[in-house]
Length: 141
Image (tube, rainbow, N blue to C red):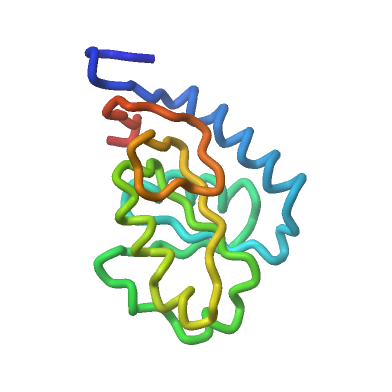
């Protein structure tokens, strides 16, 4: 749905539909017992919490400004990390988080998933559900 000509309005209904799609993807292609979700604060948190509740898997919130603050016991349990965010706009935040010590120190590159991806981004996630060149207004904003 588009509001003003330069904005893309993303609704709760679309979000629920996208959650259904992502849940099917994870249940059919991944071993949930090895899945660990990481949500980028703050845009990725609604997606992360919703998927955590649906899938029953662990979730950690990553603050891109404090990437070195992770519990030590987490490092030994990184089976299959999935990094979630609402949008890959410029790509800088996702790239920065993927190179964080929590992943880099163990030669792990997380699987990345976003709801939206801009065609001009410098970081294309492994999976994104929508492409847009517009400013996206999310229902939780």
